[in-house]
Structures are given as C-alpha cells and as structure tokens.
Amino acid sequence: MLAELTAHVRAGQALADAQVAAVVIALIDDAVGAEPKADFLAALATKGETHAEIAAFARELRDRATPVPFDAATRGREILDVCGTGGDRLDTFNISTTVALVCAAAGVTVAKHGNRAITSRSGSADVLAALGIPVEQSPEQAAAAMRDHGFAFLLAPRYHPAFKAIAPARALCAGRGQRTLFNFLGPLMNPARPTAQLVGTSRPELVEPMALTLRALGLRRAMVVSGEVPGPRFLDELSTLGPNTVAEFYHDRGHSCSVWSASDLPLHPATLADLAGGDAAENAEIIRRLLRGEDRGPKLDAVLLNAGAALFVAGRARSIAEGWSLAEETVASGGAARKVAELAG
Image 1: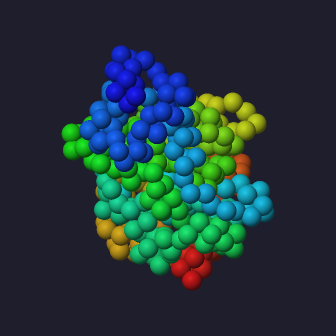
Image 2: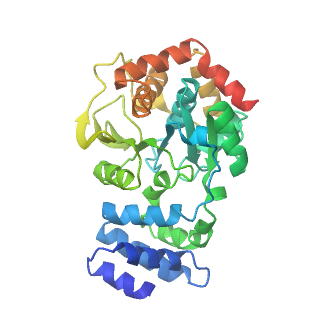
C-alpha cells in the first residue's frame, strides 16, 4: 500500500483523506522499514504538500496523541500556544518560549507544545528546564498546572508515542538533506488542542497554507508569520528587523494574508546579532534579565512584538500595538518574573 501511494504522489497526484489515513497506519507500523517510509516522505515533499493534505496528516496523528484531561472550566477558556517550526538556523534566543511566559503572566491560559533542541542549541524544553520549570509532566499534571497556574509545557515525545516508529525514516531523509512533512507539522500537533495559536515558520511560502490548515483543524483564532531579516533570511517569529509575511483568521471573520512591518512601534535600532542566543543556560539567563527588566533593548523589542501578536490572537488585546503595551506593562510590573518563579515553584 505504501509503495502504491508513493507512486501516486510521484505522479503529482494529491492524497485524499482516506489515503492519508492509510499512509499514517504504515508510517507508525514498526514492521514497515525505514527506507519505504523515507521514500514516501521524500516523494510527498517533492510533489509539495497541499494544505488539505497537511491538515489530514495533522488530524490523523493528533488523534493518536495522548490527550490532556482538562476540567470543563479550563477547556472553556481560550487556550493559546506560541511556537515556531524551527529550522531557521539563525541562532536567536528562545523568543517564542519567552513570549509564552509573558502571555501566561498577562492572564492567558497557555499550553506550550515543544521539544528539546534539534536544529538549535536550545529548544523550548531545554530553556524551560534551565529556568526550573517542569517539562516532563504527565497529562494529569499538565492539566492541573494549566488549571492552577495558567501554563503547562507539553513535551512532544511524551505525548506522541507513534512518532517513535517514524524517527528512523526522518533520520534517513535528514541525512540526505531532504525536508519532510514533519519539518513543519510539529506546531499543528499540540495534544491540548489549543483554540488560539501564533505560529512562526522560516518559509514565507508556507504561511498561508499553515493558516488554512489550522483553520481546518478547528482553531478559533490563529496567526502564522515569517519574519525577514537582512540577507534576506527568515525567522520563525515576527521580525523587528524587516517585513513580515502574515496570514491570520478569526472565528467571526475570514482569513487574510499580508506583508506587515513593525516600524510604527517603538523599536530600538538593531541587527540580527542583537537577538543572538546561546545554550540553554545562557538563554535562561537572557530570559531572566528580560523579565526582571534588566535588558530593555532589541531582545525585549522582539519579545514585546511577538507577545503583542500572541495577546491579540488570544483575544486579550484589540491590536498588536495594544498587546505590545500589555506585554510591556506585564514585564515592567514584575508580573512576568513572578510568573516564572511561580511556575518553577
């Protein structure tokens, strides 16, 4: 079956939902070898994944994730995730993780889905652990943390056991320099099933397809962004250094895609080097300094810009500019630093 579907996509034909379901069964089957799985993933990437295919894969794989047992009150809130696809290889500090902490401090319920470092020196799990925040929580512990503290980290391998059978095929593709569907599927797989999401990708051409995919997965509010820096190169965040490709949708209106600049916001002059990070310990210290108000330069600008967008997406602000102001107040008041201390417990 997998060989037939590999030939199908090599012929340039899209997969129907039932065919995606059959592929997923093969991909998570330990009895199927890594080579045919890698051949399929490479063929699909060469064809180019449609947003309908991406949504179908995300739905099938997310349905196999370990669920988070929320109580009704928590499930009734707007639940936010802030994450990027990774892979921009620009060595910035953990911007989206910092943003998630600021949003939690501002009163938003956050389910941060992520992993340890793969293409960077410090993944979200690494820097949170360095801050003393739990990253190995059970689903029950994560549900309690979101109920009581408004924040939980969901470590991807713990919630997606099916991915273990796919890892050898992904490694084969990576060794050949071949990207796969899984390079951008991660942000779509949050087992908490957030209702609102800010997603970053370093590939501007994926911004609109990923937004359409999130909508197909049932999110109420979402924004997908790719930020340009001189080069041109692209961050999987909103950029303070250049124009941003943005696709967004909200439950009460249609979707839109545009190019937007943060030039109207009070940005410090900056270069990419001003956003540089290091290993987990170094990035944790960067975050502590930012949230204690000890660094008010370009790194804080990057956090405030992305937090402003996230607070807007979560419905806590009426615009990115208003979200920037709320994030700035949350940091200046000490609320963000107190939230980190609370979560580290």
